[in-house]
Image (cartoon, rainbow, N blue to C red; front, top):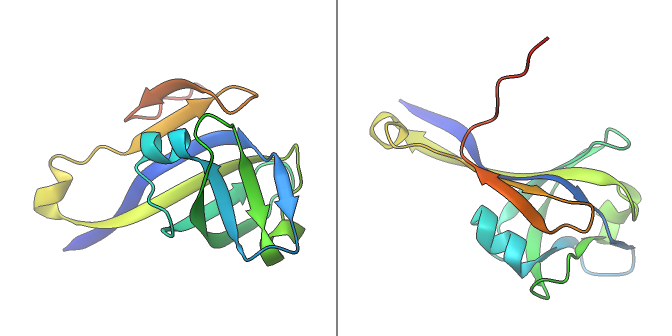
Amino acid sequence: MQRTMLKSKLHRVHVTHSELNYEGSCAIDETLLDAADIREYQQIEIYNVTNGERFTTYAIRAARDSGIISVNGAAAHKAQPGDIVIIATYAVYNEIELQKYAPRLVYVDEANRIIDQRSKIPVQMA
């Protein structure tokens, strides 16, 4: 059996740019790409916490340590500067691979600088 699992996540990053007249994609600070093991041109899912939009695009590299998260092209209608988004990737794993499975979870501050990295989501108390 194979399962599609969360591979990595940039949690609650802040959109810095929204470029409608740009080739579609999402430019992401290279430091964040490395931390989340996201490759340039890899498919990404974006979940806009601010307005509830959910959409698929692909990642492109922005300058290292710039803090840039730029939503481009048609997707610019779905996210504006200041919006908080979650950027996620998924991968397919077999049962043997799942024995060593650990997603890359990257947490940032308001300037999109890394403040924490984990492989588990903490248990939430009701």
